[in-house]
Image (cartoon, rainbow, N blue to C red; front, side, top):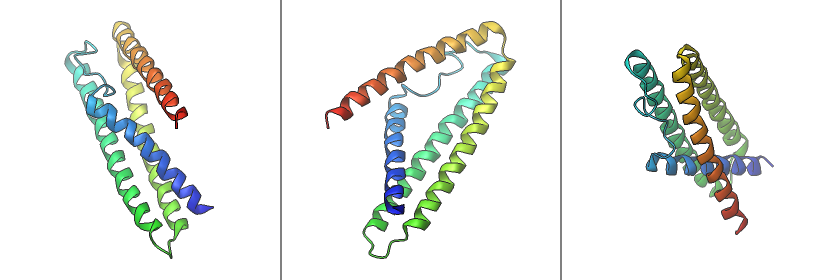
Length: 148
């Protein structure tokens, strides 16, 4: 059962990673730049920092998933694999990534609250466009997965 859990977690992370990699490579799902949002001065600097942290967090997550996939591949080829330990390690890594993601989200929300209403409106429009793209991507992925 632990082996199934470990394989499922690794598979889910790999799928998420594949989507993130495709988006970052195409820059289609990278956060908008401060120029895209019409920000200037200190607001632009704050946003650029948050954007860089977001991209860095994604890169770390991709590297961790790749490393864990390689570890799982090695583990699966072993007759004495310790799936409990592997699953525990995956759980700890996921928890750490979630904590880092929540901290970054909180910083983004604080930044948003500090903006003037017109800048908030530009962020709303950008977030709405992004949500539309993600909705289309999700629908395409569901359609693609149903053909397997």
